[in-house]
Image 1 (tube, one colour):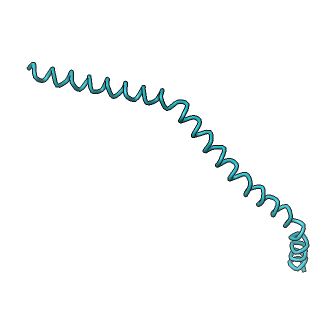
Image 2: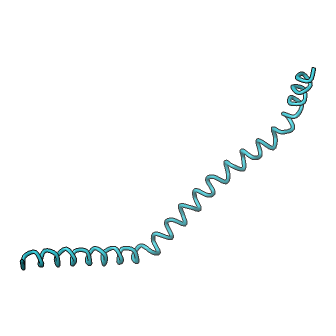
Length: 79
């Protein structure tokens, strides 16, 4: 008897819970694309604004590394 009562309670609770589940699903379908688009816009703005700075630091770092390599080559030829 308690199992039948539990099934009855679940069946009566299901229609009441369904609208909130639908509302939650609709909220997710709106929020996920909203965050994706805002994240994409933030990424484009961030990379376009700071790209020159990072390119400059990268080329400077590469130049220093090549100078270091050249110094090692020069020291090998002196021996």
